[in-house]
Length: 65
Image (tube, rainbow, N blue to C red; front, side, top):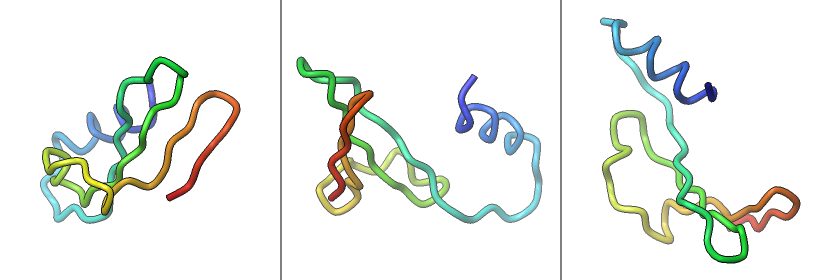
């Protein structure tokens, strides 16, 4: 289980105000790279654009936007 999954499950029952951000990764491309996007909490259904793309990585190399 990843950190995001654990945090999401813990927050499902939380009734207080939640703020912050979440990151989401795309599926890897043919070279093993996947794009990473950042969203405000609750906004993870927003479109993935260059404005909220924070980088790309595979298991060895990272590119930061």
